[in-house]
Image (cartoon, rainbow, N blue to C red; front, side, top):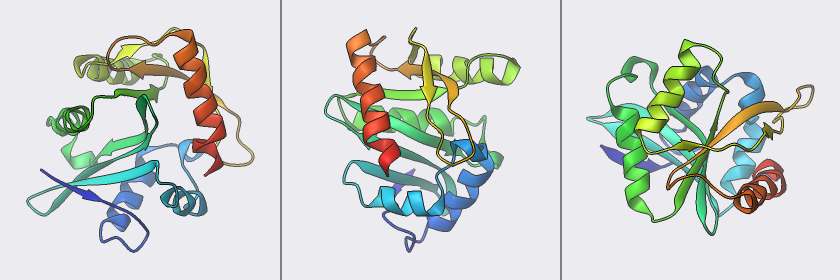
Length: 174
């Protein structure tokens, strides 16, 4: 599978990314177009599209920090879900660096959220015990409860607090 960096709105795969992004995340978890364009200006932000045999498979958007990578958004094309592509993408990211991966998921409340947690556990992630509220991306919405998952085991309270500072002070400022 080929990895292609999407660096701006003019990138050939930006439209594919945007279409999948809009259908994969609720509006309150989505950046506005202006916020997305601003994120591209940060050297810490990476948006990578995955293509196989000319077919757009999905994307992963992450922020690189000193000790970890924060996966802000990750989605596989709806027609390709359940076929192993998500695991391939996560493994490629894990293999590309020696840093811990960190991401957030909805708390387990139904079969879909339970399957999501199970998927991430199968891919080496562990749930952390810290109460976590992700700030809203858009006006008119409130922060929402999420569960922080990490590779390389659970994080300490201090590591969680660093992530919370990075999220509010860097990620959400773009």
